[in-house]
Length: 258
Image (cartoon, rainbow, N blue to C red; front, side):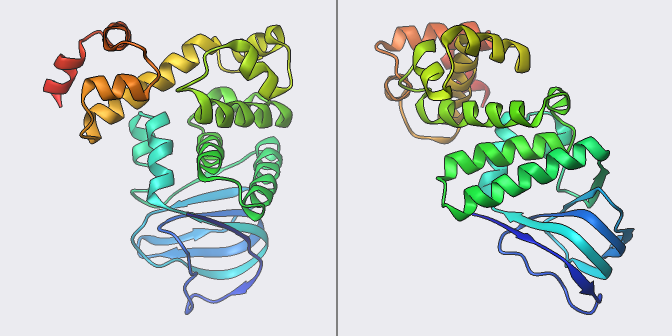
């Protein structure tokens, strides 16, 4: 569902780049020449990252001294879209687009890619890789402005927290559980989440539960009672009350809207 490979060498446009999955990115660390698509030729500049649409062959004309070729499945991209509801995220791969990273952004980008490569090689589970990819896309596309100000250590800690939350949000609610998973005290984790995400653990868990509730209501055949049980609510009334507080409308009204 995800493939990441270093890319370097001389390229001629007669031969297209092959990708294992439909969503494609080219990250240029050092290079010169052009990325060639039907829409035109685009310079391969230092620190340039390309977001390449599903349709169309990717051809290179020139040399890449150092770079990465990343492809991933539409399923992983869907997870990113669930966390980024703004139109810019949805349009990211509709047409060829690119972003030029400054020196600090480039350093962080390549450190994240190096770590992602290690996680792929040791066969980390897909929920973890989905969280990693979502963070990486949010950072490189400039969609999560707060990420740009974080240190590499902070970015890694955000990733680790997201992965733990994704695995346990349905069952675990206590700050102590997540603090132990992060190797922190409860007080330190609370301060970290408030500083980097601007939300408490309670709010982050509730946001994730309600996002899952919306998905299940939209795209599953589960009853409301079954959804409440799946999401860790002892009673359906508790789920219905939480949903209305979060969305401003009842579960029934939400279902009718869709």
